[in-house]
Image (cartoon, rainbow, N blue to C red):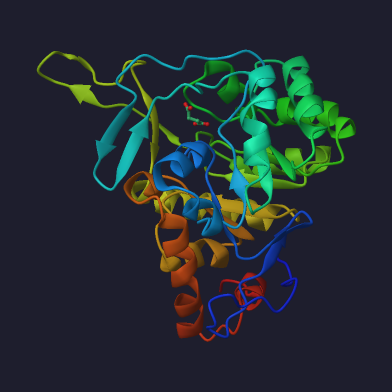
Length: 321
Ligand code: SIN
């Protein structure tokens, strides 16, 4: 199981419950990250002002996925609300590697928390270019390899195949000393096989789940609502699936697991920790509440205390019966 000891007696909320932890050597004040692409820190800063930075809702920030070339993303509609969830068909819009490095990266690296940059390519060469360019920049604490976006065909294929993951991570491993986190797809029968392949090839952590393949139908017009025809389902609707996959993966690997899929409060975050996640990421809930990360963090001490845990580390070290 992927477990850790807390790094120190951090107790910013004054609850007596130490939430500090670490991910692949990246120190974190608490175990709450954002899911890639679910929180635009720069846009949020423009909308909410510098308080967004001084009271940043996450202990670490994961960027929107960057590709080598700029991408416009998928045609509208791109979002569809479902019962207890959301389907997105965003299609990885981003400015491309060069513009990201010249623009957003500088500002993102000034955030008061460690920065993890998410990257995606449709070839090992493309991934290598991204890892070398971004990994060499100051202020980047880690890299997430997005091999699981259901809205970009080539991304999903790599993430489905253990052999492909092995080859990719083996190629990238020598190119950077930064932690490599492989983001797994839930759209496979055995995500633990992909996770084991990632670990054996040198990945430092895995994150899961990305979204479940889904669609929404407009019956009046006999067509799919989303411009790309389908997308990926996220939110509390998929939490039980995500918990099962996190539990299976955490049992199969020794590297830490970033658990996500419907984390919306302290209770659901604790469920992922008890399933074996070292830390959690908040995704869909950010669309409802830009302070969702803070809500999750503030709910964790109470959720831990009510189960008799004196710290996050105690819950991370516990095993499910
Ligand atoms: C998207 O931009 O299509 C969503 C990102 C992802 O699923 O990885």
